[in-house]
Length: 423
Image 1 (cartoon, rainbow, N blue to C red):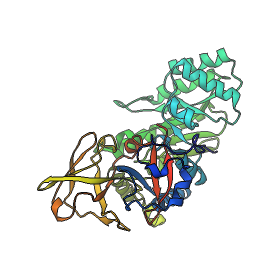
Image 2 (cartoon, helix red, strand yellow):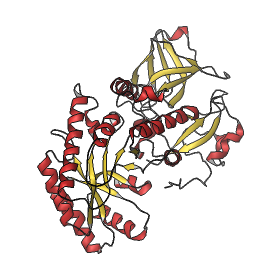
Image 3 (spheres, rainbow, N blue to C red):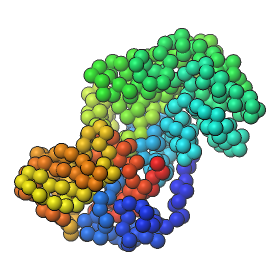
Image 4 (cartoon, helix red, strand yellow):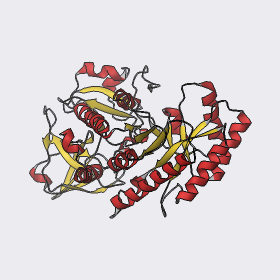
C-alpha cells in the first residue's frame, strides 16, 4: 500500500510555520541542497524537528518487535498525519494504517478504530468500496443499532462489496465497546444476519484507556482476555467467514495485546494486529515512562538489544532572562502539546554551534502561554538571550497537530527535507 502526499509536487510557501523565506518556492525534498544547519541562524523559530537517525532506530526496533512477537502492525496515523512517515511505516511492512475518524480515513484509509456513524460518512465509505477495488476498509460496531445503520445504507446502495466490521470490546466506565461476552455475541450475530452488506472480520479493543491507571496492566489484561473470549465464542458459532483479524494495542500495552491475542486457538487462521502509532517518534516523557514499564514486563526489548528514542523536538530562542531563575523562550501552547505534561528541556546550542549540548537537570517549564514558555532554574549559569533550546515533548500527537511542516534533520543537524502533516 502507498499513501501519497497530495502536495508533494507543490513548492513550500510562507504559510507553513517553521519554514524560512529561503525555503519558499522549493520542493520539500530539495531543501537539503541548501545545507542549512539548524544552528546557523538562517531559520525562523520556533521549529518542530524530526531526527532522521532516531526515526531509523525506532523503525528497526518495531520491525524486530513484530518479528519476535509474530504479529502485524497497523500504526495509528493520527499520531503524525504525515504521509512521508506513513510511507516509512509501509516500507517497514505495516499491515495497514489505523484511523480514528472519517476525515482520517479520507486521508489514508484502512482500519478505522472507531464506530462509523452518520449516513454521510457511511455513504462515502460505500461509494469508495464501489469505486476502488483496492480500498480495504474496516470499522467497528458495538450495538445492534450501529449494525442496522450500516446495513441500511448498504441495502440502499445495493453494495456489491460488504463493509468489513469488527466488534469493539470496551470496559465499564470507559468509552465505546461492548461490556460483556453476551453483548458482544449479540452484536456479532447481528453482523452475520446483515450479510451481504456487512462481514464480521474480527474483534477489536483498545486497552490503552488504562495506561494512566494505577492498576492499568491488570485491567488491560482483563480487557484483552474478554476480547479473546469473544473471538473464541464467535468462532465456535461460525460467525466469521474467512481469516480473522484480532486487534488491540495502543502505544502503552501493545506487548500485552501481542501476547494475549496470539495465544488464542481458533478454527480459522487469524492475524493479530497491534496499533501503536507513537513508536516511530517516541517521546521524552509519557511514552518514555510507558516504554520503561514495557521493558519491565517483557523480555523482547532485551532480545532486540536497543531502545526506542525520542525523535521529535521543538526548538526555540531564549527571548529574555527578565529576573534571576527565570527565562522566557519563544514557544507556547500554539507550538507544543502539554496535555500529558509540559515540554522538557533536552538540548541547547548557541547560534553557530555544530552540535547541541545536553541540558543538565534543574530546569523546568513552569508555565506556557500561547507563544511563550516560562523556564525556571539556574538559567543565568548556562543561557543567554539568543540561544536555542530544544524541547522534548510528551504525547507527540498533540505536538504534530500544531505543525503543517516539520523539519527533518540528519546527524549533523542539517535540514534534509520538510515533512508535511494533514490535520
